[in-house]
Length: 148
Ligand SMILES: [Mg+2]
Image 1 (cartoon, rainbow, N blue to C red):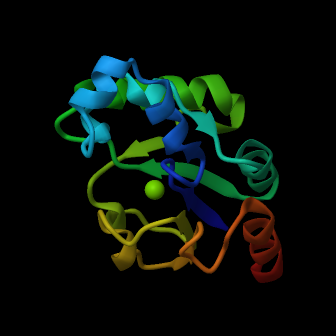
Image 2: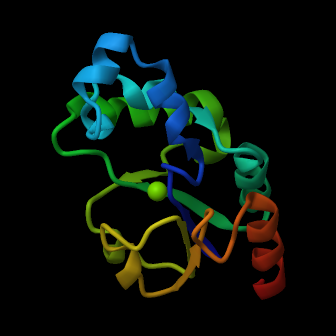
């Protein structure tokens, strides 16, 4: 199967980036952390995300599908650097950054939101996270296994 994996709050633990901002930036960008310069470089992976991504790569055609904020140019390069640091070979040249996620064609999208075109994705959307049907990476891997 061709599988797309979102970054923020699926692969990347966004709140850990907020915690690591300098106090000055934390105050300045409160409520708008997407635009804090460098924030996307500071984040830890979500629990189980790295092993989960690598497991998907063993049997499937996997891409990372993320949106980078239009108002924060360093987010675009920071997301690339994060992928290189944490995901390595099976993610090489597989990072897609777009505000229009419905444009890609594949079987599954693992995403915590329906925004940025995710809700209009033509394949199956696995809604990840505390508000989704799939709360963690173990449940995602079990579902992928079941539908493969
Ligand atoms: Mg997300």
